[in-house]
Image (cartoon, rainbow, N blue to C red; front, side, top):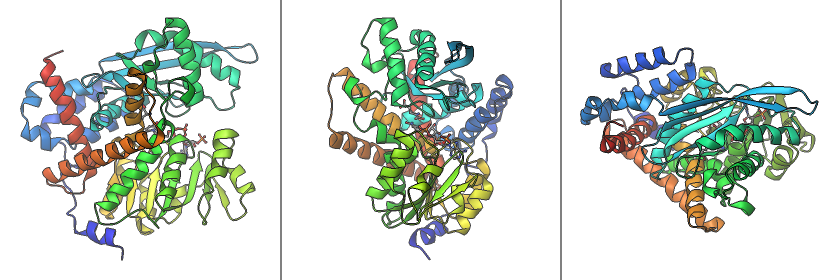
Length: 464
Ligand code: NDP
Ligand code: 2IT
């Protein structure tokens, strides 16, 4: 039997994260009533409220000041029409969102997602998560999120550009380097940030680099930002294993998705000596027992923007399983890096049966509540997204620092900062879980550590 599994067997099954403090039940009821038909948002709030008992007990003034209620209510939500003209000359109408959730620690900060599934619930759940994630980085960042139900798949370069320009024609008035700083997320990468920044500059007549992050290196972007989320997730998994006296080196790893987060999680796992045997997209997964050929994956996904089945055409030892889930493969470390609720209880059962040791979330809320319960009951170490994927937004903050000082750091220097930040986040979560009496419960650790930072700033500001 493996050391990690052996050690985690000795950890008492945490109870605290399962029971909601009765004083917080009315808060959850208000959130549900005020935001009807928003299941993802309810879920994200419930998960946090179920776990912040430890700090609420220690700091009754939080209840007095209604801080939990205030943190669950976004400061501002903007919903807008995004009209644009497609290549056939037809008018298209999408909906745009920006939810400025909490600005206690700094300008609102969080990505933009372009995907047909985007709605108020998705944007609010992401904005809510972002508040705690950004607090965990220890950097001056508030939390927000935005996006549109626009589907970039199959759209031409010109259509993407026209859509981005129309989106920014409304968004520009709500953002700015001291106000709200968007970045990428699903469906929004460097190309889209380029079109968005171009339109922002044109409308405002200001070269305000700090108004968006994830920019290209030639026009205000930061080294390592592209890699940061995936690298950070791999580093976080490495820290979780290290805390058990082990390492990711020589471990087998599966990664879901094959987008920005997934590709750079794979790259860093490989650099740390692990073997990634599978990755996926929404059409299925690839099993490559010899280890993913990263240059080939980048060619297929980043350059050709093709489907994953193209990968196996060039790689005889690999197979593509259309419609399958990568969690079918036996691996010691699993990194879900695709989207919310992509790893369910059944998947978790397979991971446990196949001897998984660690699951670290590169995506936001990829594991269902049932999956997390199954993983924990099975002795699997679990790293929640708000800690494990915080490297992306942390490096966005480093991009903002460089923009503010008109500086440009080297790759090595920036990566060293990222490593330090991920270690600090791991340490904060680990320590907070110990203090709460549930060692190894990174969910309790992350939620309490993030909550305290936001709540203390809000207390200092009074009722505003
Ligand atoms: P991308 O758009 O670059 O990639 C998303 C990937 O996930 C694509 O390969 C997509 O495949 C795949 N995918 C979508 N749905 C499924 C599914 N049901 N099963 C398997 N694969 C699927 O997005 P990102 O990599 O930027 O974002 C991924 C996740 O990471 C999101 O949850 C995001 O919120 C989170 N995140 C992103 C950060 C960033 O800096 N970009 C920072 C922190 C978190 P297909 O092309 O077929 O749709
Ligand atoms: O979910 C996330 O943390 C992101 N999409 C990145 C946000 C950012 O502002 O860099």
